Image (cartoon, rainbow, N blue to C red):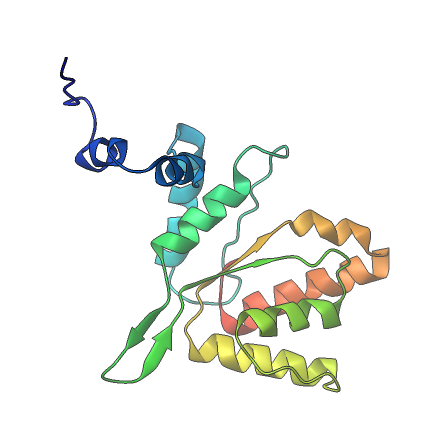
Length: 181
């Protein structure tokens, strides 16, 4: 008895002949399934990249219950716009920078997380203004156009004052660097 697998893609058919461990790993791997609301969100995110740079850049917030795919949309958007290195000029360009809001946000922790993501060396004694300047310099140098912040609701873990400071920090970054959030 022979089976034909014409209904499968060539890579899926090839996987059938592979070892159990490899097939199980393939089954458990992350998958992207484009569904209408995700397409709508991605289209809006792509629209942010197409905006001409200027003051008061447009930004969007994607809201939904836990487990609805917001992080997957963010990762898909980031993966569609990966960093690129120009070997001729020696310049790294990162149009989309994605980060997760710290669990207990404050200005120092926000900049520390951002600098870590940017690959900046750690300076434990740096004050907030030095951290801010370093983050802005690096983000400008690598051409960040959109800063995606996952788990932004973590802002609510801070006091009212801390929430205001971090929100003002986000607005400042958006205005100064002319980037969308």
